[in-house]
Amino acid sequence: MSPAKGNDAPRDHYLYVTVRPLMMRLLLLSTLFAMLTAGCGDPPPAETESGPPAPTVHPEDCNRSSGFFWSEVRGDCVPLFTEATRLRPAHPDANQKGSVFVVFGADSSRAEVWIPFERNTRIYERKGNARSWTDGKNTVECTDVCIFCSDGKVLYRQESRNGS
Image 1 (spheres, helix red, strand yellow):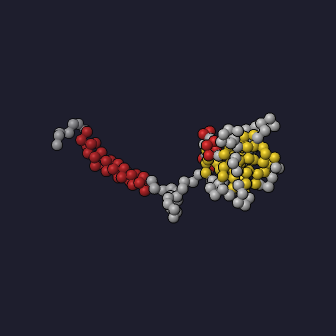
Image 2 (cartoon, one colour):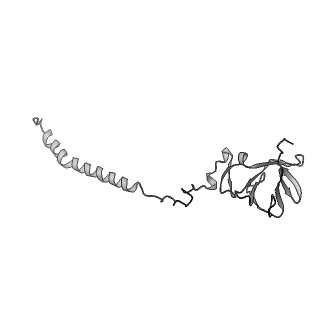
C-alpha cells in the first residue's frame, strides 16, 4: 500500500467503502428495472391457422402522395394507377374531366369506383353471374373493355388494348 498523501487517504477510503457500493446497487437496480419494463406494451396479435397475423393497415396509413389509396373492397392500400382499371371520358367534349378508377374485390363480388372530384368512393354489388356491378343508378360493366354508365348513358370507357 502506498503511503497516504496528506488528508486524501481518509477521503478515498470513505468513497471506496460507502459511495461505490451504493452506486453499484443503484446501477444494478436500474438495469433490472429497464429489463423488466422493456417487454411491457400491447401483446402481439395471435397467429391464425393460416400463418402469422397480417399487419393492421388503416386508411390513414396509405401514402397518397405515392399514389396509394384506401380500398374498402380490398381492405388495404392500393396503388391506384397500377392496380385499378382506368376509365377515360367516353365523350371528352361533354365537360367530363379526369378518369374513373375501378378496383374489384378479391372475389369480384364488389367493385369500388373512384369518380373525379368526389371525396368518397362508391361501392357497387355484382348482379348475378354477369360481369356487371351496380348501385341501382350507376353501373360498371366489363366485357372486352369496362364502361361506367349512369342512367343507361356511357360516361367513361376503358381504352381497348389496341388504343381505340
